[in-house]
Figure 1 (tube, rainbow, N blue to C red):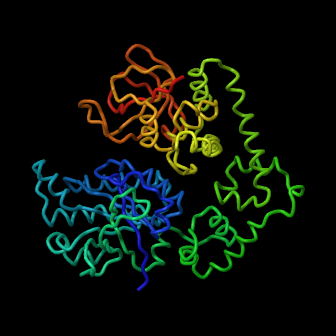
Figure 2: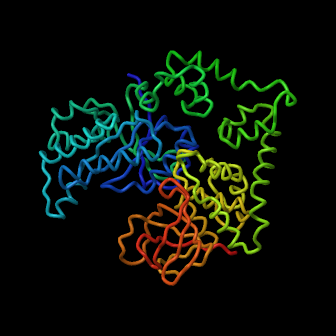
Figure 3: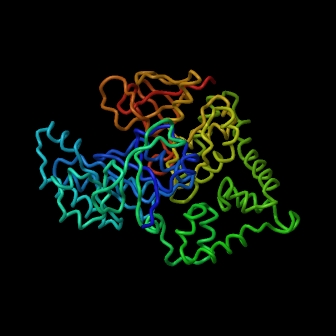
Length: 475
């Protein structure tokens, strides 16, 4: 039987080196969340896996429902988060209801037995199926026998947890143990075997209706992985697609035969991808085109930097100039492009992760970082596309304020935690970020990227709910 080996990870797995992990695994299953709360590391894990070309054939949701309607609402919340991350319809969404689900319900006076477990799980799975996603059930031997039984588990694929050298049940995925892998930051990660290797890859992609050239362009963007994974993904089309890839990557015969300005504009528009994909696409023209791209991006930002002398005002003005940029018309892409152009400098200056931003990822932290780059303040403002990582950088440089009640100044950066309970100083995982535009009494106005899929304003009360803390650059 064919098999691929991978991991499943959640917010409890932090500081992973996805590039190194990619050399040791074939896929990753990510926890999307629990209840109606997104996992604090879901977006980061999605971004890291994509950047390292690790297939994400599935996600799982930990169910804490107390009634059947709550189970449906959890499924709908999960679906929204999967869509928000831009994961394809082929992503298998796994239902995970186990011991902690029962214990938390009991603590609230609700007793869940086999009937409720089967009902809630089936409702979750059927809601997922109705939305067009494949689904399945995560379980172990104990719950297989006591809670589910063979009947319901015969209706859905099973992800079976049994830490041993052999498994006692047939399944699609076997969670066989945990391993400390290179790139796991010293953590033992859950280790899985996914049988039927072609399903692992086809869960990730859909080849139907696509031309050879369309598939080749997606290969260049890194969608189908490398080596054996790519061969499995493309199946009988592999040879033909690979031939087309080689043709598309063949560089023009000479620099004189191409329009460098046109190529540079196309790079800025995102046509040639990022990183190695761009280098391959541009071939021998890469250096001269990239130089022109840098010149064009520099020219676009100089008009802002000369207009103000106060650094705080420069930073705020940059954010103000982007208000109205949004996903629906693609205008937000210019922000992502600026970030990717300045990434190399940030890696050297701040130790920023060398992960290029993609258009399908959450872009709030990217907006703040790109604004700093655009107005030449990236030497005093931490650069990152992840809120938790941005906080870590700020802490290392002594510019983090761990105090919800802090009264910020214009130009300071606010971090939010949507799971803030409102009791005491919040120290949870940051979910969102923005820049303070103005202060008025006990309220302040914030400009945020990726707020309702656009750059827009929000008014926040001093010491209000959801405040995680502040980054205070040394302007």
